[in-house]
Image 1 (cartoon, rainbow, N blue to C red):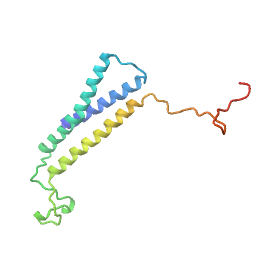
Image 2 (image 1 turned 180 degrees about the vertical axis):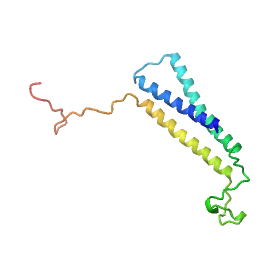
Image 3 (image 1 turned 90 degrees about the vertical axis):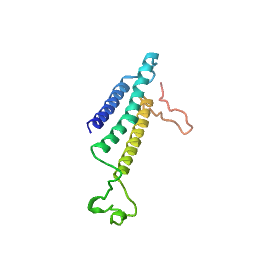
Image 4 (image 1 turned 90 degrees about the horizontal axis):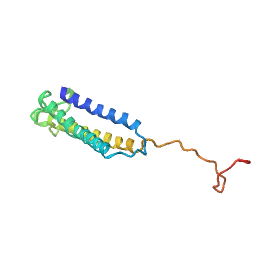
Length: 148
């Protein structure tokens, strides 16, 4: 559990570093070759942490400490999910290994969504969303005060 939590905290720290740097970097900044290499390494490390280490640590924790094995079936609260093979009503057998894998897929999906959102935040940094709308006449020409 400690390794899983530390990997999540490392990922959150990397997102914090990204957010701090995003606010410092103007949109029209030209990156040097060295800066680009450092940032590429940083992004690769973030991908490796998000798509490699975090899901792996979840699977290790579920296998070892939670003891979610394929021979242990999920019965649910009040035996609501008890399978027919074990005297219940449910026509399929759900093992804890299946739940473990579904949680791993959910972790991948959430991190993919965060990844897409962070790229969007980076691409839209420094854009001014408050545009001044000029008043126009019926013909589409801008209205100008007299004497200006």
